[in-house]
Image (tube, rainbow, N blue to C red; front, side, top):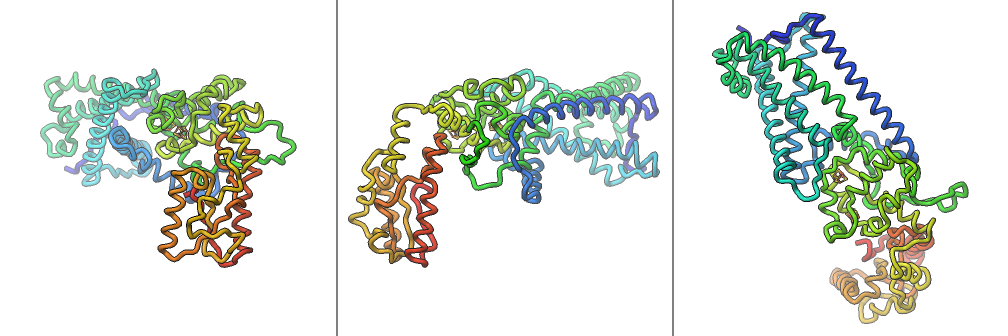
Length: 509
Ligand code: SF4
Ligand code: SF4
């Protein structure tokens, strides 16, 4: 006899089953779409931002991130468990779709049954093992969340609902399979192709056919309701990350790492700078908050958080989401707190590790810009003095700009103003010019160049701060007045000696 099974065994395939089944599905999908549309309206409160360029590259990133789980797998343990669970559940989803396609489309319309023979055996064993994998991984994640309870991993109602529904779906699936197999397959060679179902079938074998049929149909309907509950819960709980985190791979920033957005300070129509209201952020900043799974990886890697500063990048993202969805008039800076915003070092460790490609730094810098440019605030007098020094002396340390090249007096570096016959122009930067430890780095660099026979030129007193530190503090105005410098240097270098095609900066290295 050909290997196959009766789809809708015991529950029937008539209108009494199909009508409620499809109506329930329709209702669940309607809730899903309606709630997603409501959330899209909230994303639209943000400023426009183009994230649809290089669509091919974006689609490749989506495939890598969502299907291959590349970013999730970067963290061993929970990341691996999530990836394996995802693949197991995905296979079950594909298998369920194939069953529906055959039972309700290809068979009744064309008389084609493809779930048979060798394909059915492979289908059976793959789905069985996928279900087992998903169940074991979910079990592991449950133990981690509720028994091990890693510090900082908060478990909310959302988590209980999500884990509960998923676990119930998986276990009820095996009960349905076991009950069916106990009646129809036990003792046949086909049973070996469903190894997990076989264990359930053997455990239930003593129940008698009538009880098994009754258990099967009750669990079948329960399983259906659970799947519908899962669909409804997607937009209402953290389940939404299935869609939003995946979409975030598509919308991720594809520019140079760490590049901050530039404010058009000449724009006369602009009344405010930086972000104090949710409408000052972009739609992507709001969307990010929906893509966050609260996995706390960013928090664990944040040097500010791990040294007890009042900053958690995860909390910042979640607080922006709270404001966007529940209190759109609230002041972002006050909600998050100035102390938290000033605590960020802009190191990007949070962004590097985030499995959902959430962009924390731009959000924080936007709120700092509002504090600095609109409120004239700085985190302390030292920082204000550093900004003043940068403006007046061209370095945040307040040291005489004329002594900037003194460190190089006993080295092979040539001052460009005196001798432009060099191979590269070295933009030294403030700390490598004035700070003793950093000067050692600059000198080591020159030694390497000497050994390689490369002639190096420096600007000395003509060089000044590139403005990056004040920019990260939120002072975009001062940054933009300093930023043209490196470009000017490059241009000048070409004028002095057209063969100079490269310049090097300690601060950027
Ligand atoms: S921002 Fe990213 S890393 Fe941080 S909790 Fe959310 S998903 Fe995890
Ligand atoms: S960029 Fe800021 S928030 Fe992110 S890890 Fe570094 S210090 Fe923490």
